Image (cartoon, rainbow, N blue to C red; front, top):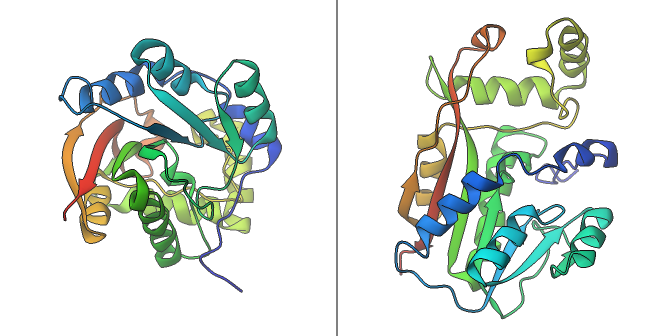
Length: 243
């Protein structure tokens, strides 16, 4: 069995991501990393796991850049194409990049790349970034950040719960009583990390973090404090080559 194989979400789980709740923040950070930082984009931007195209539409309409959505969900790709956004079906962990990409965007995607073990999950996330880095040369990452009272603990604990069949069943039951524990990744897994954890993965794989943007802390309900979660936010990173 290939322990680095990606665990994927079911169709009914994917539809819960058909929203534009975070696009304003993602677009603001993207613009700060490129346009405001005098790093003009040429070629095609790839929006990995871009869903129904909210982020891609914002980039295309406001900045005029060429952008292509890559998503595993056929319905999302169909919706993008109907909106006039270039889109194609593909798995970012295995799809071979074309020669026209100059920037790859991972908006709240990396924490969904999970495998059968902690080490295999880290390897999968790193290899996926490296796969797209070969051509794009620059990568924009917007990710959930889970800071813990015990360093790096909460994200690891959530991964253990959501990736275990038994613990996920217990979690689903508890979430009926305590809505704060609700998660659509029960039984599949999700791997949140702290800011420093992500930075270490990036630098270990040879990326240079040329810009990082710290997001605004979100409300952490009291029940989530039981998981020793200190803060939750969404940070952005611009990765470039060290060579």
